[in-house]
Image (cartoon, rainbow, N blue to C red; front, side, top):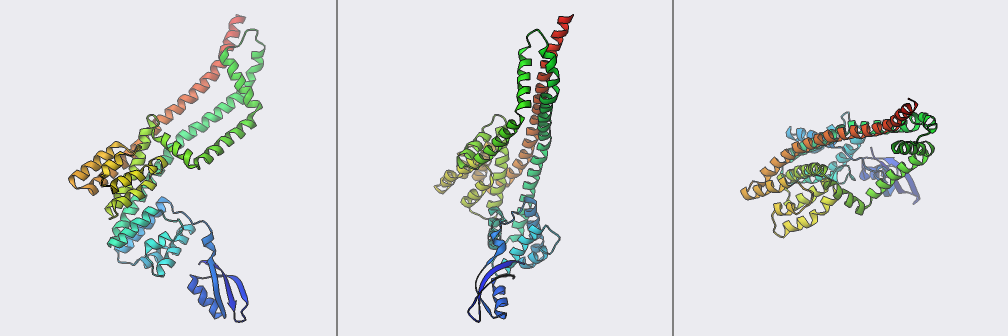
Length: 396
């Protein structure tokens, strides 16, 4: 139950400050009146805290339950009362209870979701609003359940696919640190006693090893500063724009990244347009879902093109960072009058393409990391073996 901080006046006109649990402001007012106190102002304490942001799978489960209960003839308010009593995470339960209180006061589910201070993304709010207007709420909830389930699956595949390359990277760093700080120094006394000049590769490796062993703390500070500076720069609009632009123009990898962005845009646009939203609104919402500021920034002019009478295919074709297959598919849909069908088809196609793109990226990253590790280890071995072989040859 929400906790309210309130200011009231008693029968003696004395100001009373306090805190109390109540379902809403009206309930609090009645409770205070029973104590001969009259509410002057109040605010919900929990409202001052940052709202819990629902994750993709939680959004999918929420949509699926709404779909199933509405299809069974259960009202929205009854569905919410059932959902919030189930064995779910405490943060999710709080969100459900907040929705229940709002809907209980007579507002729609989409309005309650919008009042949740960021718990729900704008996409699902607009989709549910369209479903309420068209009377197809169950169908809309079904689309959202599938949409967020696919988003969850894609993010999980990306995360799982990156585990092995990250482990290889960590192993490479550990091996390099071990070689340069523990293994190599054991050979230095041997090398210093040699009369012949050391090979350039050995001199270079010894210099790196000496630097790492004597300045390791500065290296740690430098790495931490670089990571912190990079994260801070990503928070600035200008750097984020340049960084996102660079990602879609990377050699080879840029094409795969474009496919992932295009898949996300196509799936969102298809869901919104098929639910009855205007193309302008669908484009604006879909642009914010892409996850790339460079691409998102180009949707302003593209949307204006559609407002001015240009076709959707012409507008999307003007955006740098979108896969060109999307433009040709939309053009066919416009020419045949089956744009909604073609959007559904291309969205499914790009879902598959994005999964293949992730697999191809991992297929390349893994051998690259292994090659980098082999080059580093091989360089160190050469720097050690060449002087030793030279020493034995001189003795012989």
